Image 1 (cartoon, rainbow, N blue to C red):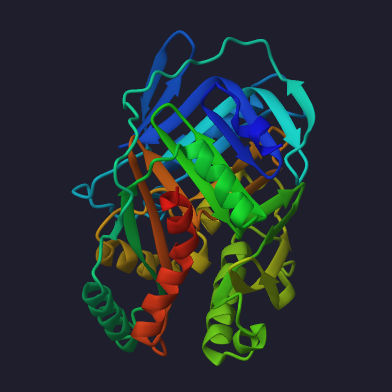
Image 2: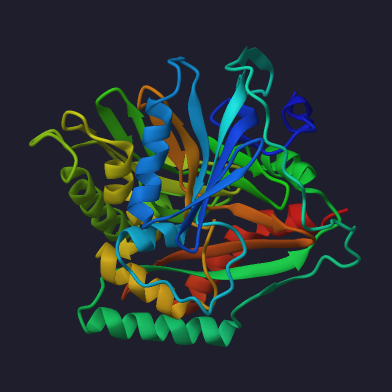
Length: 408
């Protein structure tokens, strides 16, 4: 049962793709250029660039005793990806959570798709890191959610994006608004209700003493098994009560997906064996309780000894949630959106000791910090975009999250 998963009283814990990691012997997080390594007895700090911090995760795993269940579990924030691309992140924007946060679990529990426990594994007998909350939770009295952009401000930004497209600086920009409010519910209640309302293949939860990430994501960033890697970009969204053929026949949505498929093929080409990048499925339909999506599958064979850090440098953030070209479009997103994305369009997952890894894209995702809840809703903007339709799409995507956060 789902209650068994989230009922675990210890934190931090991370859940993704049927794997629950608890009772960490180490916590590693990166913030403001400093890698923090929390051990049960003390905390170490290492000032280093993002790439070195990422490589440290791999090095740590490789030096641990061999165990098929040994893994790091956590998330990478969107702006961490910008830093890897050498895009300057505005320090005046408020940062709520670390750039990345990972745990090294002492215990792993495996679940089936119905959240029934299959097996619990004790990886080590190492002492557990105990986190002490610095924020106090008190039940909220109101549950109204407000955007960081008015409808007029949203449309003005879309006008700026279209001008940049006409100027040749970008072809497509994933632009989002952020909603903020309070809820009478705990993060664990929201995780349960959200995934009962709309089960999703890449749902995940990360719970720490000071913040929680609750994800109802339908999208995978990548899945790596041995030397094979696959990615599944999504472009095109339609309400579930409408005929999916409307989506399949949409020239705009077709152009968007094809553009992102080309971008992802280019990303994979940096780390793949020559000639191995293939679009194995193109523009197939995935339907959920509230929306239809069109998706493609791209696969490759990795070059020998390709590292996790190289995969992340090549693929993160995912092209489907930046736009094309990735570097300039990421700059545009950072310039135009009023707040940092942090968790939103970041990625949560796990890296195993043998190098296998799975990471999602954190869309349809809620951040909880103290009494406050945050979530983003966005879409791909092209020169063909109709401003009012794009705005309404973001409101529709937000509807399930608001419903769960605000209903009694």
